[in-house]
Amino acid sequence: MVTLAHLRAYRRFFVVAYHFLPLLLSYARDRRRFLLFGGPRRVDSRTRIERAETLLESLLTLGPTFIKLGQLLSTRPDVLPPEYVDVLSQLQDEVPPAPWPEARAVLEDELGPIEEEFDAFDTEAISGASLGQVYTAEVDGEEVAVKVRRPNIEELVNADLRVIRWSLPVLLRFLGQARAFSLENLADEFDRVIRQEMDYQREAEMLAEIRANFAGDEDVAIPAVLDSHSGARVLTMEYIRGTKINDVDELDAMGLDRHELAVTLQRAYLQMLLEDGVFHADPHPGNLAVREDGTIVFYDFGMSGRVDEFVQEKIVDFYIAVANQDIDAILDALIEMGTLSPEADRATMGKVMELAIEDARGEDIETYRVQQIVGQVEDTIYEFPLRLPSNLALVLRVATVVEGVCVTLDPDFDFIAVATDYLTEQGYREESIRQFAEETSDQVRRSVQSSIRVAPKLERALDRIDRDDFYVRADVEDGNDVFETLAKRLVYGMLLASGAFSTAFLYALTTVEAAAVAGLFSVGIAALLYRNFRGRRGTRVTPQFTRHEMRQRRGGE
Image 1 (cartoon, helix red, strand yellow):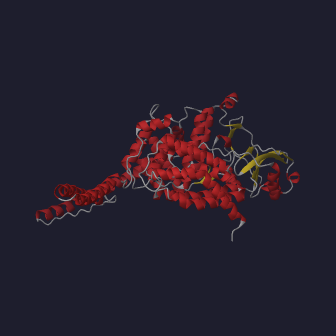
Image 2: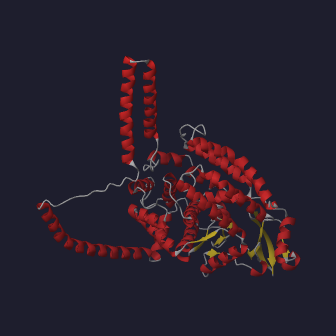
Image 3: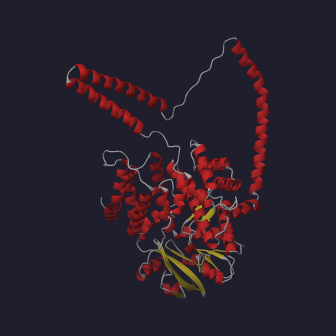
């Protein structure tokens, strides 16, 4: 039975297809120049940027759900090329608020008559977003902020989620297996994330938990929730006024130390990620403010996340490895977190990390930006491609966005130095050194035991050699079918040589028709040989990250 909801979804499907079909045709022609046949097209960085900007406009036109989808895509470098990630990261969730009468209906349906619940209520929204809008009001003489879910947003989101599910099989045809897997996971993640953001009861719980974690910290302010005036579609909280954190002129006029503000912000996020395991995941300047005494205020906890203890430990290992410029330790941390495949070419990945570090050595050796490191990891994730755990993608994006805010406050801000000081204060570096010492002693012990066992085994092997009773069996692994490819090329080459000789022989001594048949056979074999040489097999192990190309990318930003 076709319901009204399905009819809305069908209509949205055609609207979405209208906006995305030109991009999909471009992607299809990238794989086959003439759609059904032809070789692949080379797509340069400028073309990708133009397509990303077109995608951005389409997402904005399609409305709230797709704006949120674009924000989530900007955290997934395993799904999109780096040019798309850069463009979509500029996507701000700013939408004109819904008309007051519609918002009032939602508010009163949740809480009751406004005149009875609030002492005063300003009907002009102070901010509007894709899923909700915020008003100011008074309760018991205290100023509060009231966040109201956008009217009828549930129906639109449900219809758009159906459209995304219906579109997945089409999109997967344009992607490789690994990236298709990531995209399917992304669809599941997006469904979960957007429903969580519409659940204001969950946001209230996350806000209260994070606020409790910072109890007693005078440098951080997090609003308190008014449970009596909150529900599934309405969230009322303490309203803490402040200056937008990227308004540096106003901060200077207030006489605040911007470097100290950056340090406070960075340490707050390090505590959330490494100590508390629950974090505010939307740290753009619109959600951060500063009070006159230098306290940093956090707003909007609709996008928040959790990290388990294992991921916390690996993040610590990653930061320590970056601070120590230990390439092997960086790769080990990425593998254990699930970001990097254990089968990836470590030498190639090591070169990527070395380039990222070397290109940042214009200043002191330890003042390079973690954003450059993470940026190169993100680029490499797409090129290989690899799979990125959803929570870890959010952590990586939070790290880069927070650093961007810190650099706005202090252009000379050194993320690594602050992180290193924090890790040292919390005892993480000492713990790392202790673990290293224990692992080293275990390796020495095992090495001594092995050296004791080697002598008898060596003597037995020499005895077998002396008796001519020593055999060696070697198994060659050929995961990329190299031997099969070489065999095909050898056979094709021999057939082509014999075909060419037969064509010449028949043309000289017999009829033209016989020579033509042999010639057609030779042309067919030549085509197969050419295709074998042209076809891409296996995984490319040399990413497109020469020093020159990295500088070109940065120069274009």
